[in-house]
Image 1 (cartoon, rainbow, N blue to C red):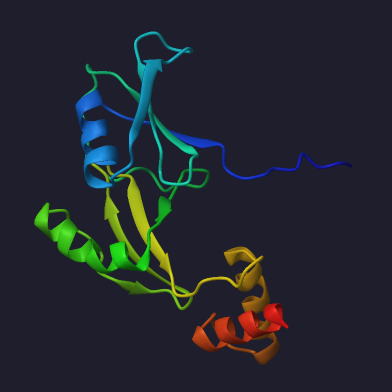
Image 2: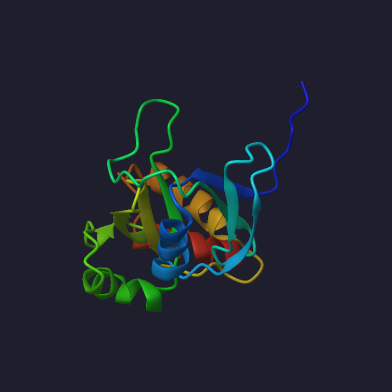
Length: 177
């Protein structure tokens, strides 16, 4: 049976509360430019806000100014979204704790993920957000995914628990040669 081959994420749409809360968080906290707004073409009582997360793709939010924000954690039942992760540069990542603290936003602190560092916090509606910063740059002509695939192969071949710096360095060397 033939596959429907994807070529990347086109956009992600989140059900938001009011317009002000959405713009305040996605543009004001995360720095995503507000691209445009139009009606939700499937529900005339909602607006559809479009933001650029930094790669030219889109994060969109359905808003309705009659909905109140509810900061309770979004469900994590099977089939629900656990969190959204956004790539940030090392320079931005190194400022994240201080900048979240300045805004009074509770967060996890820096988490060591072996091949990347992460910080977690919730949006105003309880959706878990991750800021992620890779600890490596792929060699010219290769992607982060290619380096990680090779690092995973090396890690499992060696019987190691998780991807670490040594696996990344060896993967990059393998890809270059």
